[in-house]
Length: 135
Image (tube, rainbow, N blue to C red; front, side, top):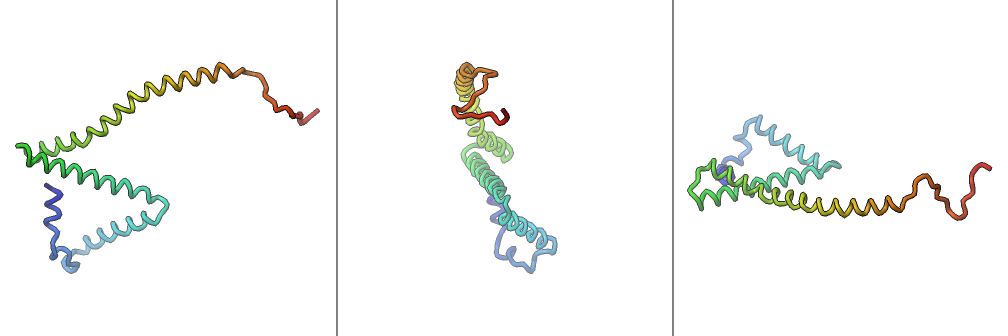
């Protein structure tokens, strides 16, 4: 709802630069400059976090809008439910990784035990043609 409200407010009259204040021009100019500087720097991977956050919030807005139209919920309750629904994939992934880690950790532990059994401590290992440096 909020997302569509912001886009409905943007019209031809708001795009006229003559009506913008000096603070708005400075703010948007600094924002555009910093994004351009970040895109040209070696830290441009940070832009993926920016775009990922925007995509995530658009998804929350879409879920909230669908909940608002399908169910009889207030706007606040639909936002809370949308945030909860958006966290479900993260929760499922964390649960999957936690359950998978137990299986992996057992197999890794068994492999380390096998390698430790083959290792004999305090035994120097030399190549066949090894010659000591000092006689």
